[in-house]
Image 1 (cartoon, one colour):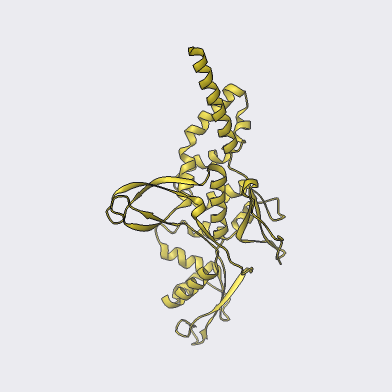
Image 2: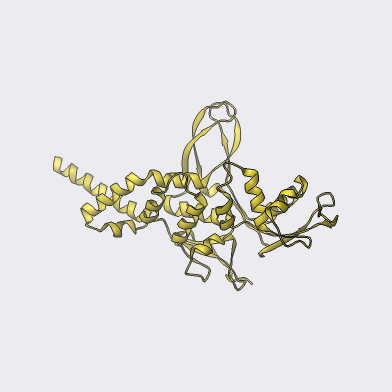
Length: 311
């Protein structure tokens, strides 16, 4: 059952439509999300985390702070954010960055051909969002004859029932990716596959025993039905004109951006407290774009004052 009726995105109001949506306990799908900009509180949250912190858990904490509502659900708890599909979380993080800092991204890349470093920039509006019309929680497929799973009794199983990965799955497997990506993918399939033929007890060892072809067919089907946020950006090297695609890591870029702003955050808090006599609490609770607007106006006023005193 669908909860939102004819949802429309309103970027200026922070109203967005999830590529998939959140299913509540009653089986109602909620797709419309209201998202506020980051405040100094979230900047502090990010800047105080260590590099080794589970980045998926950080996404959960950030979104649970900034998502005002999902459909008619106004009390957006951690468990709800964990229950969102990974593609929906990627989408919300993208919109959160846009609302807070704008669309422009600047950085450096190394050309894979000539190995020279160059400056790059692109617009977040160019990132392609793939939505799916399959409004369901569970999906089914049939394996090819060659990929059918043969159990210990010699019985072949072709039907696969699965769900798509959520934030909770992401939090669990992401810690294994740097050291053992194969283990992480096997664990992910074990969590998402709900039935293989008439086998309902899906274990890590069972998934590990599947053939490469079987896993490939399942992973391909999961990708086919899953919404996505395509962060593969095409660049051209200014030195050798080589064209290549690079997978932009929005998570790492965004969180490093916030961590690197820690010193600037406290400078701005100090400046506004000094001149406007606002409390630290008031300033940290202010949306970042609004805080920076006041800082900009204040700096202009100080500059005018300094010039007037020199005359």
